[in-house]
Image (cartoon, one colour):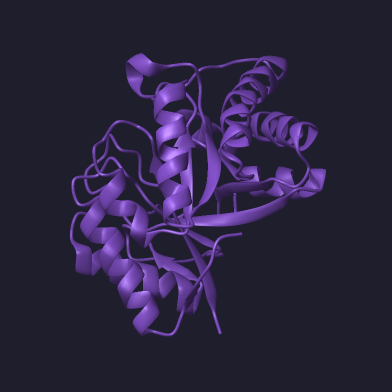
Length: 246
């Protein structure tokens, strides 16, 4: 039986966490650098625990003004530092709640840079491994993020997106471009099933791009996030695809 994880970015103040949480298996929790604070981290962890959802750190550049979506060119040591700081914050709260941190996923600009810049990917991977070698690193399928994490000995989860369109090289269409976001739930579901069953995704030009789908991301800040999560969760169950966190 095929097994897949469904993850969603949580604790970002979007007001949909309670509606989404029953339909995911992993929650990426904002650590305060692009959104959230200690209160929202604790609240989101408690919500995840109530639904038996695995928790992970959603690490970012320190950029609340731009929701972590502004690229910053930082030296590797600075990237390692900001990753470690966020892991310390969320781990302290998770420990107090009696739950284990399971994974790490970069957010926004940090995610995109780690996908295409080997130095950024390497700095993140080394920081995560130094903090806890058992954490799973979520990264864009086929990217430097996955490659560098594997090279350091980390377990990885190749991530695909239910609500984003793809370029011919397997990268995500920039949000600044038309059709970057998929807003139709049926189109999203079709893309998800193709990625899981066929190991490909259709790019914006119609090219079949090979990918690996270990975990499916649904963005919690999308207006249709709750509907997408419910439809994807229920459809995958109906298709006898097992849903399980790493």
